[in-house]
Amino acid sequence: MVLPTETVETGQVTVDGTRIAATAPENAQFIDVTGHYVLPGFVDLHNHGGGGASFTSGSVDDILKGIHTHRLHGTTTLVASTVTGDMDFLAQRAGLLSELAEQGEIAGIHFEGPFISPCRKGAHAEDLLRDPHPADVRKLIDAARGQAKMLTLATELPGGLDSVRLLADQGVIAAIGHTDATYEQTVSAIDAGATVATHLFNAMPPLGHRSPGPITALLEDDRITVELINDGTHLHPAALQLAFHHAGADRVAFITDAMDAAGFGDGRYWLGPLEVEVADGVARLVADGTIAGSTLTLDRAFKRAVTVDGLSVEDAVQALSATPARLLGMSDRIGSLEPGKDADLVLLDADYELKGVMRRGEWVVGPQLG
Image (cartoon, rainbow, N blue to C red; front, side, top):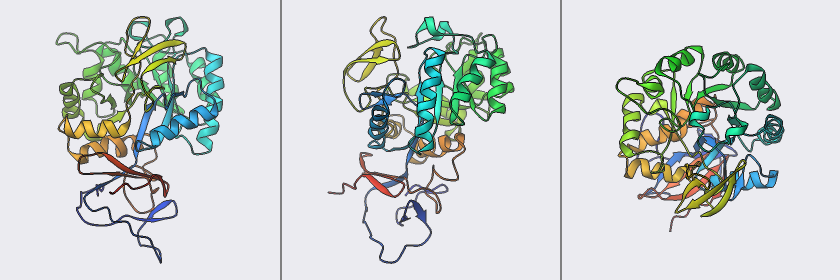
């Protein structure tokens, strides 16, 4: 069991109803999971869909299908991310997603775009991009009815710093991403209240010895948590290790940045208004081959972190559970195995393959111990 302060080889997790309990209830059922890892449920801050369904454009049933797909892979808490679109459309989607947040299906909404740099747009429609004027940012926050958790913006654009201050005042995470900012501009954004780097290294200027750019500013500042997409496509293992070396596990959050194909398969999909081809598990825009999100699930991110990147199990758990839970302001409920918290558990075998998932005391994937 990976606990907040140590990893123990013997012990038990007691579940009573939806919570982890300090003592076992009478007539408790015991399940022997000797030889397996018991971890807290994974927390994904940045996820656009899965199971063939999009959080940006799908119906409620589609969205629930996407959420369930990621739960099957250990993600017991998920923030639904949108992609760049027309402002009225995004406001409408925010209203729909906020209902699912109020029902406890998702942990909130992340707006990725439209307030991003055309120079670093990635898989976002350039004709729908706009400067982050605070009035427009406020429109999306208001449409989310208190369920907006994070908004990614290029803070060097006109209105960027004022929008960061607005987001901070409203209790919404201001995330620097899809940006062409200089080192100095990034420092100014952090001082204004930005606290997250959206998929560090991706969709931003590379680190240079004369022009250190945003990567250096984001890694060196203890106020910033950096997102990393650990799928083997977005990052070289050395880049991931560089981030861990400078930021530490308590400032790294593994994310999926998943699109519809996660947990579903290769084929043609849509990411907002842009067509995507997924081949061999890698998603790229049909138009120009730009990487378009990922097909990652967090159980794969965990296994890769330990078996390829050389991270300890404890650091991987921190980056997949405790750190994102803290960012969301939910560490009193999720992110670690402690009495009183939600009974969100992930069961892995000795080879780090997923063998069980519990969410709020109910098995999503029953323990497969044979």
